Image 1: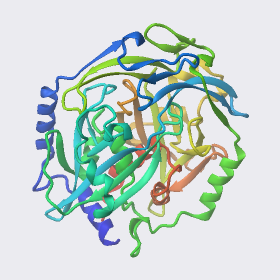
Image 2: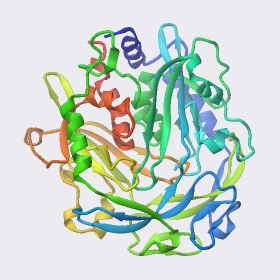
Image 3: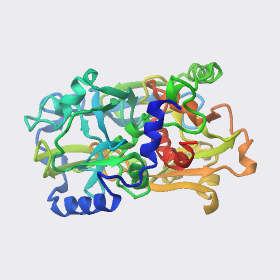
Image 4: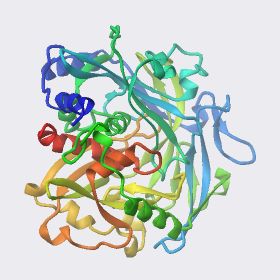
Length: 459
């Protein structure tokens, strides 16, 4: 294990440090939540400030032409249980920054995290990266205050870069959305502003089991860390020394070649089977999700007041990895999953990723394989289980139950089909170095697996 891998592992074992204790963090967070005076109100579309339905297309757009828009998508996926449909989708072509500053205190890496309010959070403040900002925000299109610490990520070459990669977000709700996930390490002293707090990696892992606390963007960035899972990090090349096998890359390429999905942007007013009322756009079945509008009064943000549209999912999702160990190395059963908003056909997803309530409106053949086995796993096989929120800047009260389940003997050698494959977690770590390989739900589960595998990280 090289020097960086050792330092990451040491942080993963530092439950408390001379800089911060976990109990002290909880006291700080409780104080921040008591002081937060933010107010989120659902409103009719007509009451939104700066937003409106575009004449002709019916797209829901901002007056500035920036931020994002709600458009339509016409999807064709031959061979699927449901082959064609149309739907609303968020189009946000800007590349945002999800950045974390790291610094060593007394030989232990700490990460500067932010207690941030997002309008879609179900509980107000959640733990976000040091910087979580769209290009429109950090270039101050909203004419608000500057984003704290963003200058560190606009000149990252001045610092040691621990991770830096563009990653996708939800392909069912976003059209080709990507953000820059970046972790830099600094040596200089940094003023800790109100709302920010240093934490070790062990402390972040412990906070992952707290429902709706570590937000989606933080989980995505943590997954990009060069984490030394058992079997990683032999030699000078460090935790990414385990090569991504040619056969794995060929399997992904073959799957992308086998499918021929078509997802074309269309005007929102051409979307079929969706109904628009004064305060929502919803599917005629009442399933899937709705587009709604909110008005925000926020404390501690660059802009104190705004309104915007959001996606409100119907039901709590489920994302789960089945895992096994082979010669001591952790493996996960991944699904090569096609989603209409992906840039390159498909990405590797959890074994099971769905919102179970949605399947009451779909053919039985659409039901995900292994859903019942994962959802009904006995407690002794559940390695991780927590309900966590998705991105609160665009999604309203979106939550997923994240599970890691040790596969029982009958499933360890099962063949769910050509779109599934057991992959050593060290290889998944290698794939995260590159764009468009692991989806956002799989990256969350990689962060959760860090906490599961942490006891072996120094062996």
